[in-house]
Length: 65
Image 1 (cartoon, one colour):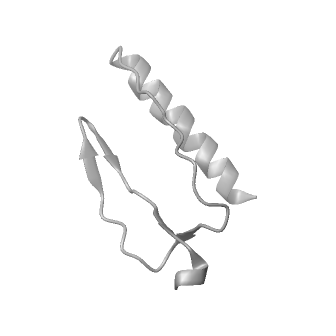
Image 2 (image 1 turned 45 degrees about the vertical axis):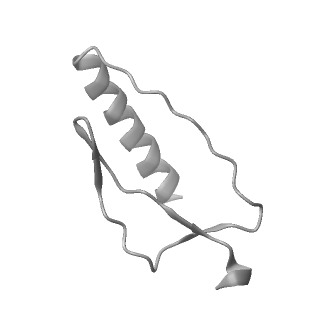
């Protein structure tokens, strides 16, 4: 239950920051294969987009692992 709460807090904080600088972001969902899972063993290297650092998720198919 803690993960959804932390995700909500992060999203609210992000929205407050964006509002304070009169900015916005466009979220685009990307469909994945129904068998895909997020890999937690892969290194997550942060990428900077404008003023924000993003940790991308690595998606793998468990049948190919």
